[in-house]
Length: 225
Image (cartoon, rainbow, N blue to C red):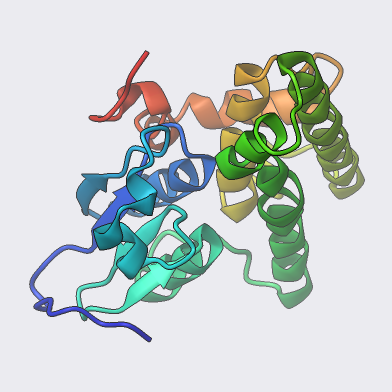
């Protein structure tokens, strides 16, 4: 594991980008748990993730990255969220019961591992560049994979029950943290989710909370219209 020289008195250092869904997840979790962090923006569309300084920090050239107070360099949003859960357990993101925890993790991975990678900037750039796809074809790609993915999430939520305010209970957790940024991306790419009633209901409940509202891309210091 890579380490940098960081004292234990320092806040974690968070590298993100306002529009990055995976960075958005982490911002929500930081807010829910009341954890302060030092933010460094990495402008994905300008290619800052490919510059030597950041590529050394994360050879994947992806966001987010978190440098912990002890100097550990953490990559991948779900790993960062697990670290937050273990180091700041006061506002839990996972249920107590073991099987329910696995259900929540599975839902989160359905988004983070199955939907989100197919809308990633580097994938879209490859579609437009080497593969020669035009805007219409890229839009079809996005609508297919995001639409199908969120439809599956709707089914999973309905299977879990519709009598809770959030995905898997009456308090927000890991599943909600992953769902809200993915719905933001769906809206940004013009994906029709009007028929996904449970997904939209949960997102509305989440966005009524300050922790989610403050994490919205438009509220970030590196925001660009």
